[in-house]
Image (cartoon, rainbow, N blue to C red; front, side, top):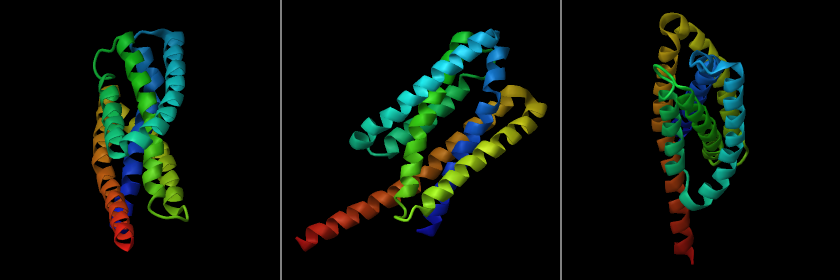
Length: 193
C-alpha cells in the first residue's frame, strides 16, 4: 500500500514537472510562431478561462465516469497539445495547443488530488501531493532552461511529453488500488446484510 502511495506521489511530481516545463516558455513559443505579444497574450488569456471551464468539467465527469478514463484522456490530451507546439508553429496551432493544454491541466489537477486524498482521511497524502505539485512547478522551469540551451523549444516540449506519458502510467496503480478497496468494502457490507 505504501508503494502505491509513493507511485501516486511520483505521478503528481512527473505531471506537474511537465506542466512547469511547458508553462515556463509558453509565451516565448507563441512569440516564435510570429503572433506578436498581443496575440500570444490573447491566446493565454482565453486559455485561462478555458482552464476554469476544465475545473468545472470535473464536477460533471467525476460523478458519471469515475477517475481513470477522464484522467488518462486529460494527461494524454495534455501531451498531445504539447505535441502541437513542435516544429513550425502556426498561430492557429498555438491557440489550439494552449487552450487544450490549460483546459486539460485544470481537469487533471482535481483528479490527481482526489486520488491522493482517498489514500488517507487525515489529509497527509494531499499535503504531500501539493508539495509534489509545487516541486514540479519549481524544477520544471529549471529543467526547461537546461534543455533549451541544448535543443531549443522542441527538445523542451519532447521532454514534457515523455513526463506526461510517465505520469499517465503512474496514476494507474493508485486508481486501481482504491477501486479494489471500495469494491471489497462494498462486498463486506453486502455480506453483513
